[in-house]
Image (cartoon, rainbow, N blue to C red):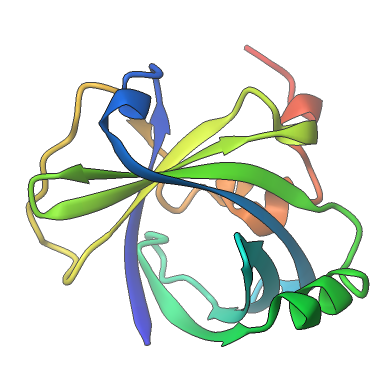
Length: 158
């Protein structure tokens, strides 16, 4: 139940031609407290409820518990969520022994593309494809719970 994850910005759409699967995801948050978030997600024909704990100092590991629920339950719970729904398309891309989950955001987060990679341990070696840019692991502004409150379109661009 401990999640070890690295997060990167995506610099090109090249991942699309490598994708094994693509799924639309709608998610909201019942709770976005920094020590715990409770997320409701509609992913295809299924729903999920997820509880995540506080990240370690590097933002690399944290507690995560997830349970599959019905689509109807997820739709009902989404109506109870805090303002700021996340709408994205997830592409799954296999690179050697790993699956990169690439999220292309829509709505107020349009223009943002992030990839996440789950690891077995913090020191696991992995290959970075050419479409990966800056690492943003641990940068809280890229957490979905924060993107629901402070969407990408509101950020000041450098």
